Length: 524
Image (cartoon, rainbow, N blue to C red; front, side):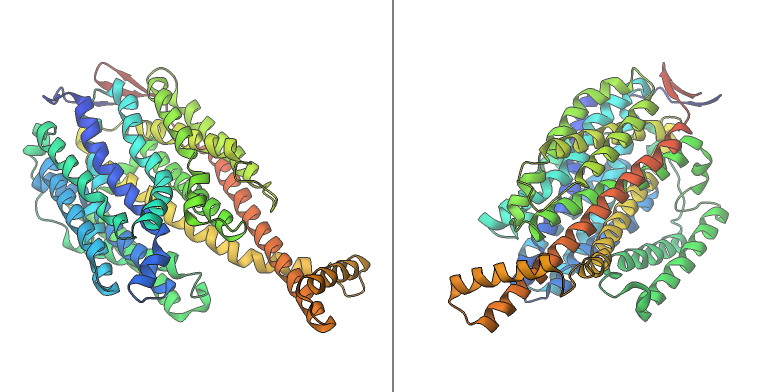
């Protein structure tokens, strides 16, 4: 049995006020990650850029965000968590204004990189402050409140972003952060304070080599994920070089951090079994949930012809499921074995993915509303118990470092998931198209009758000649063929996401049961 004793320090403010204060910052950052994605076509048109160039608006943010995430623990100890959190919110809010006011793509990309740097530390620092403000036996309930920001914000982002863009301007997707940021600053100034072990910490000089290597491998890795499909992956020389540089710098980073006397991030924390397994599980779940969040709106827009706003509204009931989960999971986490909650969440999410794998081109807007709601509920069942279980056996002094690594791996999993599902949609469409073409032999009587029917419809509608009618009928069949091939590629994706969830269940069983008793957390 391993035990991690916890200091008896408690904040002077009500812990629930602290929870709301740090949740505002987290909600703002996570919301902005997804809200800008809906506005990309409008951004491209406004700054005279192509859609491919506009995707760098997302990439520049994610790269700088990922670099700061694991370094947030050192900065929090060096400057104080409260002061560092306030600085990050100020940077994020000011950069949001610059993003909204940007006249050119270059200025927008610079502002997004600054915004990403400010937002990178908001999640881990907020999570560390939240966890250390509550006694261990109440951390599950606290994480449920925190989870509202992390789980619900990506669901509301596309819907809210689509509404702002359609009714006002894409610039308001960034301006909306300003009032939230000001409120977060006010509440943190009033309620948050640093514990003694943070105020008295002496982290020493920053590990410059570690930070540099971290920036190189994360930057290259994110660029490969974002641009790999567009550049034909291994068929592109520059993608190959980026992969090589990412691998080489990653190995050098690991070597540096394991040998340095005062590393940027303490990788020895992975010796803790629950934390190591928790990081692996959150990486897999990050890939699954971000993959699903990416696929569903795309399906409704590409194949069903819905607008971005309407697609966002259709998938928004996932937030209802997540909120319902948060209302009960926090209580259950303190009363039962969290491993059962985590396993149930993975299982339900896998079932919903298989459910989505039954999609057809005849679905209505609310045909899968229950699958959408249940998938949101399942995400809440995984997020809160997994966070408390992964970090429940760590000391308070380890929470800052652990939160940075944990959130980084969730984001990395999300980036991998988005890249993989987009690649499968593109590549499998060609595979299924080739398979479907074989059933369309010219001598097939069903095909001949279909062509004849379409020719009659075209000629009756447009009063066209026989040649034009025949060509139009062939074009309609080709369009239908492409739509069916695209549909099957989406179905493949949903089924792979189900495999990820079901394959994660044995890993959940390897977790140790975490129990909180009177300020001490034990792992059985």
